[in-house]
Amino acid sequence: MSGVDSDRLRALLDDAVTGPDSDRVPGVVASVTDATETVFTGAAGSTSVADDRPMTADTVVALYSASKPLTGTAVLQCVEEGLIDLDAPAAQYVPEIAEIGVLDGFEPDGSPRIRPAATPVTTRMLLLHTAGFAYPFFDENYRSLVRQGHYPDVVTATRASLMTPLLFDPGTRWNYGSNMDWAGLVVEAVRGARLGEVLAERVFAPLGMDDSGFLLTDAMQERRAAVHLRRPDGSLKATGIVMPQNPEVQMGGQGLYSTVPDYIRFLRMWLRGGAGDGGRVLRSDTVEWAARNGLAERQRVTALRGVDPVITHDAEFFPGLPKSWAYTFMVNDDAAPTGRSAGSLAWAGLANLYFWIDRSADIAGMWACQVLPFADPAALRHALDFESAVYRSM
Image (cartoon, helix red, strand yellow):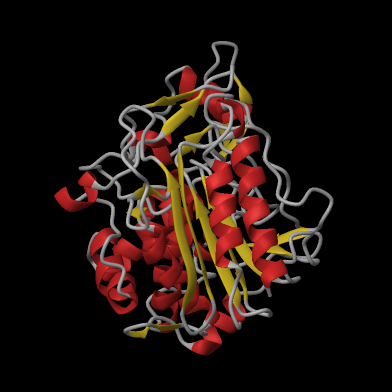
């Protein structure tokens, strides 16, 4: 692309951190790239409402679910090397997943009634979110199981937290959940190393992602933005939320920290067909099939219904437009009102981080803040305004 209107994009970032609390975020970093280079990076606001340290391009943020595509990339590398058969039972790599059955109601005392699954979970199902797993903030049954103490919350990053029952027989429909945490365990099993080590060697190093990982270094901690909570009255409160730093499971679906410039290098790799700034990460043919809808006919991505208002609102990107799922991104099947081309890849992180990869238009971008609940109306509006402005510049 020939360039973007940097002044306009910076003004939008300034708008996002000014005005009444209910209409702003504390701080934001955003960036845009084409397949050749980063064409815009900007930051505005502060890392915390408690101390007003300025948000900068190298501010470290919790990725939450923006971790998933990084883990998915590690899985795809294993597939390339013949280490993983996507259609073999995942229990071939992580035997404990075979112990998980399907939720079939509740006993009078509130304990779950579980039946055997009709088919085994496969790694392909984990990548596509068709295995049957959910999240306690997007499903009332899961929320009940956690609140009543039958399973730990996924925030504990324990193996026990991943043993929650399936909502349906594997492969029968799409549902967003803890699939990629299991996929990370599959990678660990075939690589014989922790997921963080695998990502550092095989994804972060060839991409030059020096500020990314599960564990916060001292330098990363000094630059970390606080995760904020928006109270019901719209005001913002800095929290002490930090992802577990010595977890039993390095959660491939939620546990990574990074910076926006680091993540932009990852997005650019997908624009380039798998080539990173410092080496190839995926084969070009892998990118071609992995960047397409992998769901079965009549399976579609559905709206996410929030059941824990502290964590998330109801969430749906581009309501009314059909959406599917690739390996492992959402796909907008039709062109989006922001200008995003049909067939583009995208997803988000719980603290209102949003990114997209438009391979048709050769453009990718990320807009990142650290605010809960997810799908915060102000944050989402500012993110979509930023994306729209990028396309108008083109």
